[in-house]
Length: 300
Length: 266
Image (cartoon, rainbow over all chains, first blue to last red; front, side, top):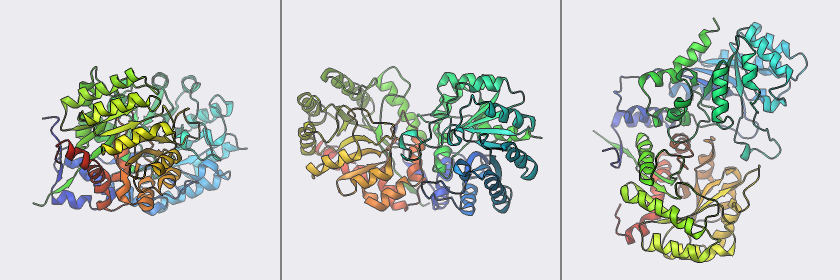
């Protein structure tokens, strides 16, 4: 019966898997989905994680080694990492150099660095060049609401054009945290996307991943953006019961990416969303890894 | 073979934000999602189309919708009666109708009036007589609260006037680092985790500051995801004992007296 009171039962093997807090949800997901222990789901590609320190709070996982350990326990096989330092530091070149170095030193290839570029800084084009030529980054991560520009700014259009020409994947973060609970001395209005669809259409070759977009984008704006070009969305700030299932009604499957927004958010939030919605194996696999993998493969 | 049971009760759910044309259909759909995450019971309140400041008639209609849904799923859901302290007499009548004489087991107060207003006193006193917990919405929004929207400080003031009342501080202010501090001195006020982003550290701070016995899991589904809110407990760096308390143990303890009076044995 669908509505009989469920009691979550685990055998001893599952319990031992749950002993660590972080591994618990992965084990529970497998156990509750009735999957055989050997039917390992495909590894996760997390497109939305950060290194270094959030300016307003210490986070479990703001030490890179600890963060990598958590990601591995949760079944992440690749994590696209930006740097919290990229929000407020003005010496972006050293932010990106540290990010690249951290990704090299930890995780044996698990971490893929996405550098910060602030198109309102003088000679920002050099930061972009370094991301590609020196750090071999496959993409960049932008935070317009922390860098003080709107998306109709000509410098932003130029940045998108240059990124597309260099084959970089552009991650655009619309918000880092709920604007209602921001620190009063550090408020960053959500990025307004009304001009973005038009810009996407005018930028040939652009591949764009919107992170933390669900609180900001209304349904029509999301549909317009997805229709405008090669635009994907992550699930980190997706809310509502059965959120992924609802999203897939409005958005093509190949545009949905797994993103955790860790260590700011509990990793289990994104992971459990895969369980909350009834997804076919094909849908789950696409979101867990295939869509993200295809995005990077396009880099050549 | 050894078995480990993880029981989960959600203290904060709604009929809105869920597909379905009837209250029964909506609660049924909500339960299907809850089933996928192993959530055994839901506390549900407010109707299919809620209002900030309901008239006595609207209040009654919203509670009727919840009562309809509860009748379909009596073993899966508990109801909290939605009241508006701006209509004190009507609220007391509704409290009697739905809790004293009906199946509901708690009170939900939202944003019609700040909860430190004296008009709440008779409601909280009556709820306490009936052994019903009072769940009070509370936010601290840097973008500005609604005119009658309470803060955790308001909740603390209410609790100071009613030391015997069991009060659940829903959302703990959203700005939980302030909210937890505001209600910390009041031992019968509970930190409730629902409704905000799954920001890491919330649950750990709550357990550290007030103890796991005063922390409750809630989701605010269907507006929120069960998953994102459950992650606040399952992903927290706290003991398994603490998780069991937060996920079900505490709310079972809170509701046990009123459930016993209604002849419901857990």
